[in-house]
Amino acid sequence: MVGVSPEVPIDVLHCPYKTEELSHLSLGPNYARPNPNALRPIKHRKTQIQYHLKDINEKVRCQLKNYCNRESPAARMKEYSQLVENLLRQHYIAPLSYVDNMRAQREFKLVKSIRRKAQKAKLIIWVCDKGGGLHIENKSDYERKAAKYREDKNAYQELSYNPLMEILTNVTNALNEGTPLRPILNTIKAVTRPISDFLNELIRPIYDQYNQDNTIIDGVNLIKRLEKYAAGGHLKPSTLFCTLDINNLYTMLPQDESVRILGDFLHHYVGERVKNIWVATIQKLTEIVLKENAFVYDHKFYKRIIGGAMGSPFTLILANIFMWLWEKRRVR
Image (cartoon, rainbow, N blue to C red; front, side):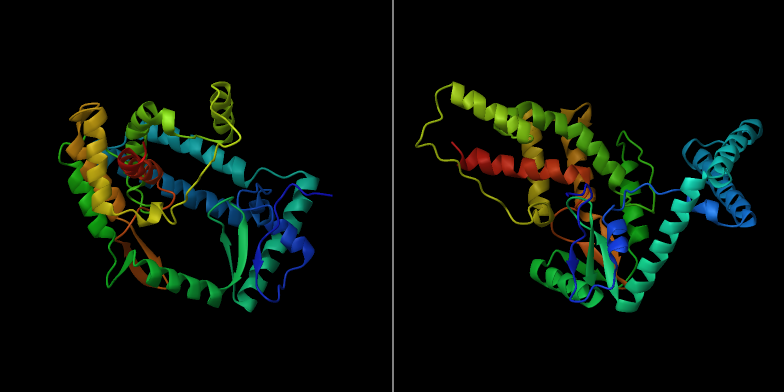
């Protein structure tokens, strides 16, 4: 019998988890479990409602004042606040069915047991980069691998200070120089993510338009291209198919060279502007996306000095454009 959920990779000598706990972990981080708030006392849930309601209202008022240069209208804010409170009450107060309640209790106990065992055995449960599943590993092994990666790649610079305000200042200054966009900066996520989204939406259609003949999108596209290739009489017994892979392409892109190649690409296919945005401005925004990335690991601050961040939408298209120049020079 084959299960639908993938097995959790276990990279430890002795795994403390039972089959039921591993089965729960195999559901992955996107598993939608019953609302666990239904298990908490009603007083606690009401407190949570008021806490989140106050937090949301304050953020809305702040956004209106900072980005719209106006105070929040009292009547509309009262109406909005009531709608939000009703939604929060539906989330926190609505009772679960008997089946969902039993399921929530069982899974709540499972999660507590998983956390307790992970802390006791000093394990790390993290989300895999590809596939989205979970991986179990000893904390010491994880730290050793992380240190080795930093030493081997030299892609990160350790900082002696928190660079958040510096990054915010650099991003804000760039956006105030006439750049026609205003991404909402959220310190919970990377502050450069909205710019990366914007650049991806701006540049990807250009790349797709001019490089569709030499780009394989997915498996279906590959099969169709092979069928067309065979129909043209090119597929013969002597035909050789060759592939090559570049290790860590996204994370090891030369930053300054990638920005320069992006400019060459846009000048070659579009000209000086893309939708009334100067190519030089696009290059400056790209430089921000690449260079203004920092993270905290083991209570230390690090800043990326090589490559782009995984998960940043524009990193993929920038890597393709980087390879565009390589193919243009070497592939005939």
